[in-house]
Image 1 (tube, rainbow, N blue to C red):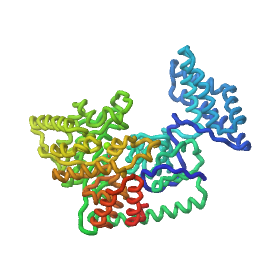
Image 2: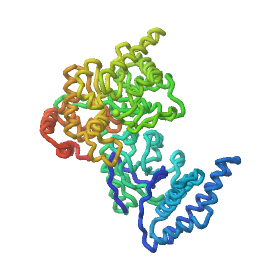
Image 3: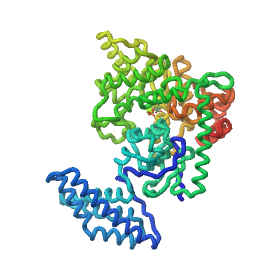
Image 4: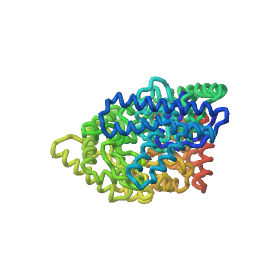
Length: 578
Ligand code: PEP
Ligand code: MG
C-alpha cells in the first residue's frame, strides 16, 4: 500500500482499477527492485516487445498501408523491435541495475535516441524520433494503457495521467470514469474546474504517480482530503467504504434543503447561482437549488469538433439556458479563449507567456468577426429572458469601452434587420486582474455589474500560475494582498450601486463563505454540485458572526494565519464538509 498526498480539487471518493493515459511525456523515475524480482521484470520486458510487435503488425495490416513513408517507418520500428540485441540491452539493464522494466526501457531508448540526435547527418538525426516513438510504444505496453480505451470503457476506472486538458476531462463518460488523479495542475486549473462540475472526485499535483501504478493496482481517490492510495490493504478499503456511506448520508441531508432559501440565521438573503461550461449543466444547477447562472463559460463551445460553432449553435446553447431559468438571470461570459483553452479548429501562435498573452477579451478584440458572431447570438437570446453579458479579463477602461462599442455595432446590425433583442441587456465585467481591481471605481461607472474571478485574480496578484503544481502552495485567495483587492472592489461596486458577485472557486470553498459574507458579498456563483453544501453554510451562520470574522481577518498579516482561522471557523459550522 502506498499513500500519496496531492491537492484535493473535486470532492468525493472513488475506488477502482486505474487507467493510465498519455504516457508520452512521462519521465519514468528510477525505481529499484529486489534481486528476486529481476526475473519477473525481464519477463515483462519480453512481453512488452512481443505486444509492441503484434500491435504494429496488426496496425499495418488493418490500415492496409500502401508503400510509402508510413510503411517505411513501421518497417524500421519492427526491425528494431525484432532485433534481439536491443531487447538484450534492456534486459541486461534490468539484471545489472536492478530497476523496473519501465525504467530500463526508458533509460536505454532515451540514451540511444540522444546519441542519434547529436549527429550531423540529418538522416541519422531523424532516427532519434524512431527511438522516442518506440519508447512510447513499449511504455504503453508496460503501463497497459491506450487513450482510445477511454472512449470505449465498459467498466469503472479511475483515470491517472500526467496532465489532462479541460476538453479531455469534459469528454469522460461519468458512468465509468469514477475518479481522476494527475501529476500536474492546481485547484483552479480548468481541468479541476471541469472535474468539479462533472462531480468526478479528483486529486492533482501528485508527483510521478503514473509510473507507480500498474493495471493490476487498485486505487482510491480521496477528493476530500487530497489523498490517493495505491493498492490499499483490506482495512483501508473497509474504512473508505464506511466513509463513502457517511458522505452519501451527508449529501442526502444536504439535498433535502436544496429548495429552501439561502438565508442566514439573522435573515440576510444570499443568491446562489451556478457556474456552467456545458448546455446540459443548466438543469444540474436547477436541480441543485441554484437560482440562475452566474457564469456561463462559453469558450467550451469552441473546444470540441473540427469547426467553430455557428451563430445558431451559440443561440441554441444560450436559449436553452434561459428557457431553463425562465425569468431568472443567466450571465453569459463572452468567450475566454487562450491561455489553456484553444479551439481545435483554429491554429494559434505559440506564445512564451500565454497567460499574459493574447487571451480572453484581448483575443476577441483582435478577432472581431468571431466576437460579433457570438454577441449576435447572445443578443438574440436576450429577447427570451434575463440574459446578461459579461466580458472577461477586462484590464482597463479602454478595453471595456471597445468591447461595448462592438456590442453597439452588433445591436445596430440587429436593428437594421428588425431582429428582436433586449436593448437594455445588462453588461458587466469580470474583475480578474489587479489593474481592474485597483481601478474598479472607474470601471464601475461604465458597466452594470462586476463578477470577481478570483481564480485569475489570485494568479495575477501573486504572480503564481494557477495550474502549476510546483508553486501551488503559494497560490492562495487568503493572501492579504488578494483580500485587500477584494475589499476595494466590493467597496467600489457598492458605492456605484452596481451588482457584485464572486464566481471564482472561493465561492464554492466552505472555508471562505463566512469571510465573503462578512466582506459584503451577497451573490455567489459556483459549481452546481457544491450549491447544497454552501447553502447549508449560509443557513447556519449569522451575518453578525461573519462581520466579526471579516474584521478579525483584516487585522491578520499572513496567508497561513488567515487560512487557519477561516478553516477553524468553518469546521465549527459544518464539520461534515471537512
Ligand atoms: C476566474 O478566473 O475566477 C474565473 C471564474 O474564470 P475562469 O476560471 O474560467 O478563468
Ligand atoms: Mg478567469
